Length: 196
Image (tube, rainbow, N blue to C red):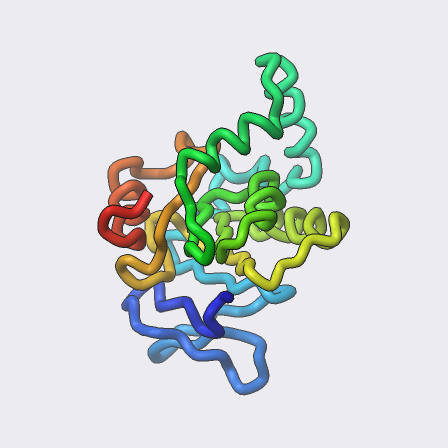
């Protein structure tokens, strides 16, 4: 099950605590990360700049349309989307109760399938709008989300301790990471040694 307070400060990497009124996660002085519909906003200044950048405008403004584009992409490639996703998950070789980081989860097109596995899923994206659209998708589908934590964060500053995850997963969007090398280093940092 998802630990109550799994997040650390994306700035200092010190544990965060929940505000007494439940409205935010708190870190050091001047560190307050609001919770919006249960989704923590764990962006430091550079992530906020990235989230508001022109390259993210489509995801902010058209989150609800995003899925049509993905469906069209799979159809154009004559690929079975469901089977493709299952094949990718199999590559992770996840065991029951594994802890998985899904980074760039967007509208939860993968998350919805990951929730069928007996694992804990931390699904994050830079775009709150995409996350809220995904959260709505999961609710409409009646998915059990007790083993899921959605979060808004920048891949360059992940809000987790070193080695927190057994595996990490990302599908699409790597081209949007501002520094590919740093993004991979940060993802590697939060996955345990010999993780996937």
